[in-house]
Image (tube, rainbow, N blue to C red; front, side, top):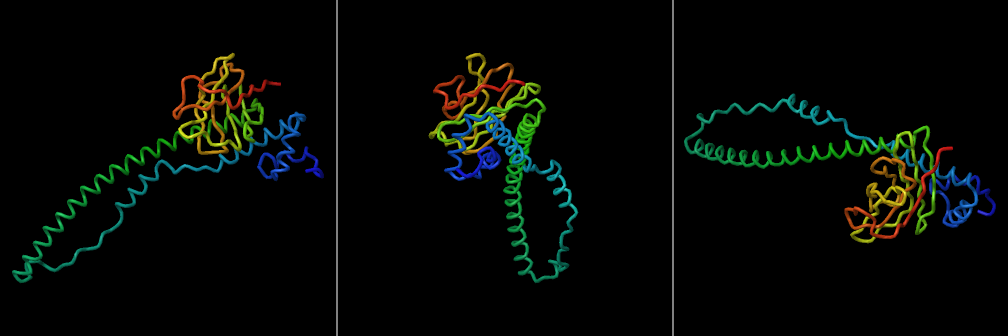
Length: 253
């Protein structure tokens, strides 16, 4: 770190490519260098956007296309041997086997019918989740790509770093965090808009992810900043703990 100009490490810092020693030294450099802080925040936001860009969602018509092709598959032709040509005892065994086969087929059809219904419900749930995920991803990308997007970075507890990206034109904000420790058991990180000292819920973070980009729920609507608190699983209507992070929103130049 002593032989490398810290002003040239913003990209490596944004991609978590520095050693622990270099990372610590660079973070000591950040508070005194506004240019590096701004560039590192913008590169972190861009890296998050590029990561989101590789997500894909199955085409909505995939299920219908598969079901349509199944109907074109030709089944094997059954054997031509007539039951009546068999001896009486063999015919009895054949009829018995047929009744058993019919019973098995009916039972299988009932079970498969229940399975098909479950699979249909699961497919509907998956499609709904995919639509919601796609909308969230699109919302994040729209904020990060907005011409008026402004960023502000801050060091968080435990060595984590957070960057808030705000677009006044879109009236939305995104929180990009890296290295966030897991919340205690039964707890979750909750985001808040700071409306002149009154905290307004802005959604929950994924407790299982140390690095994530979160689209704050709701419009910025004149809020001056945001906060993060630790709340019971499911969230709270108002903060119940001291904030683990407070970031003021950047202003337009």
